[in-house]
Image 1 (cartoon, rainbow, N blue to C red):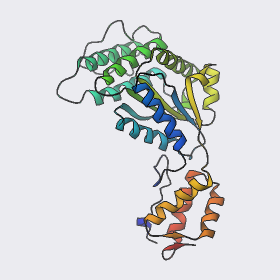
Image 2: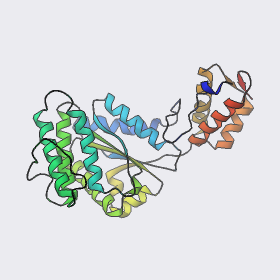
Image 3: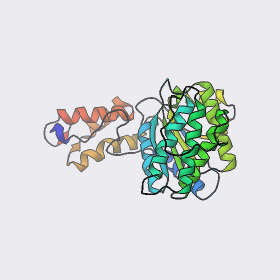
Image 4: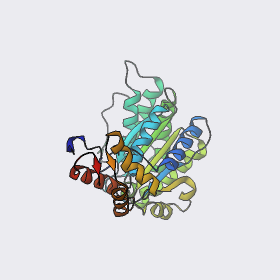
Length: 291
């Protein structure tokens, strides 16, 4: 069959043609943003699993859901091994504030949040590596204490309050969270602990490799009570069938039962391998049936 019409999409973080088998994770996220928007406490969501199970796809889906629900989002930001938590939080805050500052005039809340961000970037790194060229005055006395955990809370509170003037709050999306060091994971958990206690309008959805929940627990012993941990793995047989059949059916192509069973067995329902098998058998097939 024509490879140009191939509907399957193996890749790193590439959205599959049909997102199946992840309703539970999506429901957990929807409940969290609904609770925070209603002024009720909610736990941030942490996804863990091997590469290729669709964690990044889910974060991107959360981004879409958040925007549709009226949240200002940071987009999905991937952590790197050389990232520091202060730099990461500054980048996330700046991304959200750029969205909030679109227009002819800045609201007072957005201008204040930009001033808080400027104070934070000046104090968080003595070398000024990530000082931003912001045309506002730094807000003295907020997010500039030098206590990173405390300053992160004040920075995100300022951005969250600016977001609530136009939206429901601020959504932070972090991928590859396991790359943060133990001290930074401890500070991050501590900051979100304080924000959940004070019901700040800020929610985080993060993802990482299988060791992430343990790394968070070692960094902060009560982290399992701070975050909703969801392990993302292979798809169940019905979801795996849908991932293969639905794109083919939409394109007018059939799978024989034997071919379908063989691909599901060979892939073990692993999302990336389902897409890789789907792409390969489509390109090899002759006619309108994959046998």
